[in-house]
Image (cartoon, rainbow over all chains, first blue to last red; front, side, top):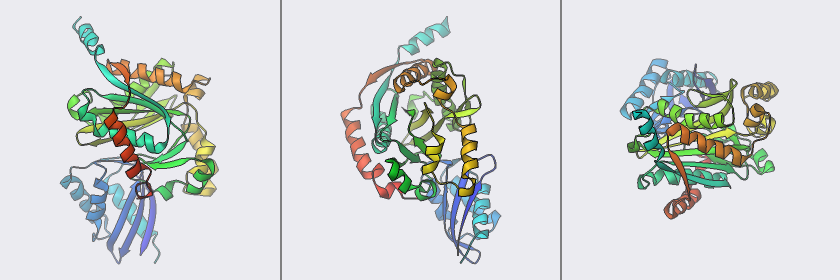
Length: 96
Length: 263
């Protein structure tokens, strides 16, 4: 199934999610938006880390956190919690 | 006395000033990147001021081109589109002066902390607006406002121990034209959104109550950066290596759909 969402991170920037999932599992996710991340290539590392993650807030936050820490990413205007909320919103707006 | 001497000594430092006038979006973005990539070969930081011809929309590194931009409409207006290597939002580059600031991390002219370094570089723009008698201030993360309205947006990237920050200083603003090319979440809300943005965005022309030319604005910004960093800016041209690399980057990246439409 596929879903899209646009979510304004509280006190942050706008995140746009394109989600592909089966059951409760993420197949692929694209995280777009007007946020900042150093280095920029970190976004692809986060997207990759989320593949296979269950669609549950804690697990998504944890997967993003792992990618952030492992790669020493710095996020501005976006947070692991915000990414999780946006992904779950995309799930809610899904159609087959 | 000691402070005065230190200041005089600093003022004798000459950083590089590059003035390239108006060029295409592809060249502008490529030259910024080339200057950053070759910054370790320069002994000093580089400040560049430029404009966009034709007018263009740049989107942030993480944005989806088709999510943000009505490509067909841009074609009708002859407006180019390009993806930046920096994050942030979509920008319509028309009546503005754009600056770029490049320094190596080891030059120690900027704070290590990214948020602090935004503020430091933006202080050059704020001093420049001060030269035009406008009272501007920095609003984290990346905006500069006058009278509570945004007049400048800024974006930074750090690669290979070099720092590039570029940003706009709006000399004029046409919100309706901008939104005819930018996609909005809901067409029904477009009118309200345009009114909101008109309330939140301003330009030198609006704030000064008169048109101030590109050249006058560049001159003010040059003085602003000199004042803020306590250095002199000495005009020079891009080096042969920078020009060559810019040409290569332009072809491989900024003028290519693979890059511009990758998200």
